[in-house]
Every structure is written in C-alpha cells, then in structure tokens.
Image (cartoon, rainbow, N blue to C red; front, side, top):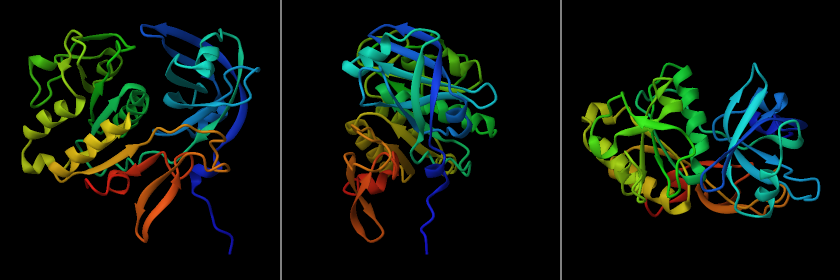
Amino acid sequence: MTKKHPDYRGSIAVEDAIVISHQHFAADQYILRLNSPRCAEHAMPGSFSHLQCSPELPMRRPLSIMRSDKQAGWVEYLYRDVGRGTHALAQRRVGDSISVMGPIGKPFAASGSKSRPLLIGGGVGIPPMIFLAQHLKQQGIEPLVLMGSEVPFPFATHASLLKVPGLGNEASHAIALLEEQAIASRLASRQGYQGSYQGYVTDLGRAHLRSLSQAELAEVEIFSCGPHPMLAACAKLAKEFALECQVSLEEYMACAVGGCAGCVVEVLTETGPAMKRVCVDGPVFKAAQVFPEIS
C-alpha cells in the first residue's frame, strides 16, 4: 500500500514571484511582500517558504510566512539582514522576480476548540504568530498575542485600547496592525522600549495566566515560535498551568523538502524517541514531544 502524505506535503509549488513591496525597518529588519499566488493559495499559519535570495546564490533561505491573501495572491515575510543570503535578499527591489518554493511544513493545529488561545512569539518567531492570530480571528476566536524582541519592533505600536487580564500599565502598548483588527497584543523587551513589559515575554504570559479562573484556563492553549530557550520556557509555562502547547522550531535548512535530512531534531513519539525533519515533519510539534523533560 502506498503511504499517503499529509495534505500540506502536496501543496508545495515553485514559482517566480514578483516583489510588490519591500519595507526597511530599524535593526536591519525587512517586510517583503511577493505576488505569489500558488504559495498564497495553500499558505497556513506555521508554514514557510524557501526563497532564492539572489541568482548568484543557489542555496535558498527559509522564511516563515507572516501574512497571506489567497484572493489577492500575495504572501508576506518578515526577516532580518543577518548573513550573506538575507543581505542579498535585502537588495531586491519592487518589480524584481524571486523564485519561491512553498508553502512548506506542518502548520499549527488551530482547530478552534479553545476560546482563549495564547500566542507567544519571540524575534524572528513573531511572523507565524501574526498569521495565526489573523487566522483565528477569522474563525471568530479572540487570541491574545504576546511578542518579545531585543531589537525595535518592526511595526507601528501605540497604547492599547483593548484590556488584557493581568496586564496593567507595565505592558501598555500593542501592535497597531493587530489592534486595528480587534486582536489584543502586548509587547515585552529588556531594552526599555516604550510601553513594553521589562522582562521576558513568557513572564508576561505568566502574569496573564495567573489572573484567569480555572474555567478560563481550561479554554487556553499556547502556540509559540521563537528561539529554542524561549520555546523551552513556553513548555515550562504550559506545564505550570497544565495547558496544551504547540511550538514551531527554527533550524538551518538545505533542501527544505525532506531530502537531505539536515534539519533533524529528536522528538518523543508514541513509540519512543525519533529523529524528525523540521522542514516537513514540522516545523510545528507538540511541546511535550520536543521538551519531554519539561512537559
């Protein structure tokens, strides 16, 4: 019998996408929007694309999808200029053609069974949280998005008009992009940014969860993406409050379609520890699989 691949494995396409806009923000951060209708058609929160940053660089770079519009046919990415590939990508201009492979990867399992999802993103893990928040909002679910960054946030921020239980004046600012859609958000940083909680984003999450009743906690599930230490802290937070938690992993990738097995990580499965490819078996896993010693 031929083994059937999951639906998301059959959605990968390669297309020449056109740069629609390319915005530069502080700390060498960029938001890139591409006309990429085949990718936009199947993009889901947690999936990513493999981009050819320059014709002179044969190796592609994986970028999480931050937003997607199926009807308009565009996808959007947030990235930082931190190496040869992303530096080359930063030079691309409106009208340029970029080869895109995607969408790739197992997305977040956001079934909508919980009415109070808590989304925690750190650094380059912020984009999937924005995508997921908007996806949940379209289902009539009210997520809370907490973002942590040690560089300036690449979005307009302002004092929030939406109240969040457990979070007072020490975390007063929100992402305007989300607030305009009535999605609550708060910021955390140790860099003294205006309106941000002065500490780790997971501590901000803990303050919120402590303010909830047991009935309210029963409606919470954590979704997270960011650096490995932050994901471990999210797994610990989930255990502390007996919550389900999904994490999206970040790994260096070569092929990004499961052929090279260069991005494998050890996860706990029903039959014991196993090596799984972040690109196609993930990037989303249950926190208990990645951090069994915590969960």
